[in-house]
Every structure is written in C-alpha cells, then in structure tokens.
Length: 94
Image (tube, rainbow, N blue to C red; front, top):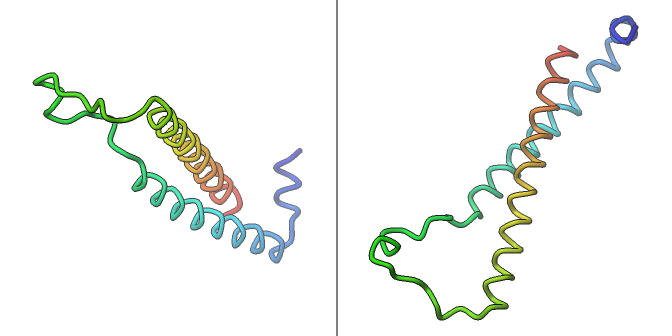
C-alpha cells in the first residue's frame, strides 16, 4: 500500500523530497568528514612498544578528553546513519 502511495505523489512533491534528501546528504557528508578529521588517533604510537606512557595528564583531564572523544564517536555514527538512510530514501524516490 505504501508503494501505491509513493507512485501517487505528484512530480513536484517527489522533486521537493529529492532536493531535501540531497541537501541532507550533502550536509551530513561534510559534517561526517569534519568530525572524522577532528577525532584523535587511538593508538599510542611507537612509544607503546618501549613502555612509554604519558603520565603528566591529570585524572580530570584524561576523563574530559575521553568524554569529548566519546561524544565525537557518537556524532560520527549518527551522521553516517543519517547519510545512509537519506541515500536509500533518495534511491526509492528516484
């Protein structure tokens, strides 16, 4: 039944939906690129082989950094899911 409703939409409504989906995909793609570029590397590099650690950070500083990093990872997942859903919907309305 929903497919019949999809075919019943006028060409203007389909065009408006496709333009909106395209704009959402563009915004989420750019946002996804920016958020991924802002994320820090999780590896400790070659210093971890020799047992070097960075102990000059305070407990509060470590937790603040972890919290910000966790928020960035969640936002990355949300942006990627939004991009995927918009792409599927765009394919359906095309």
